Image (cartoon, rainbow, N blue to C red; front, side, top):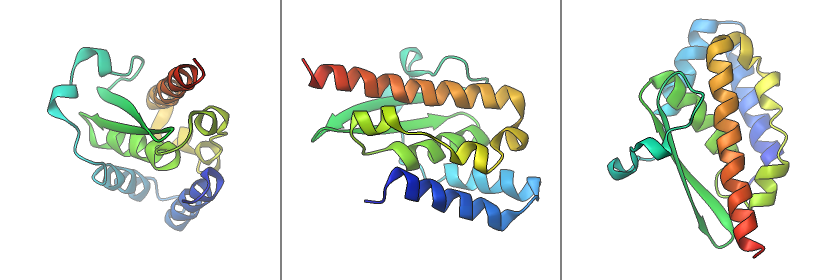
Length: 143
């Protein structure tokens, strides 16, 4: 499995190809969302919605062999693409890897200028919720 840094470098390279073409970049982010695994219908409930997102974003996590597996979905294509980027970097990792991850790809691709301040706040909420799950699983492992 590639390191968190390697995956972030891959993402940056993909976005560099698009250059400053904002329309192509947004379309690409939306395409990425289509790659998410199907989200279980029974998990589309209020307690799985990430607070602080303008769109609805559902996130669940489970642990297998000491690693966290996330599943997510959104009711909008762009937000679905954004969460897919985070899962690409952080899925199937140990809790401490997730908690210590510095997600520099976000600034390196200029995410703030691509998605605007409202979605940037939601993106930060997604990161926070992913890390909260990691913290909970880490705490559970250490008990």
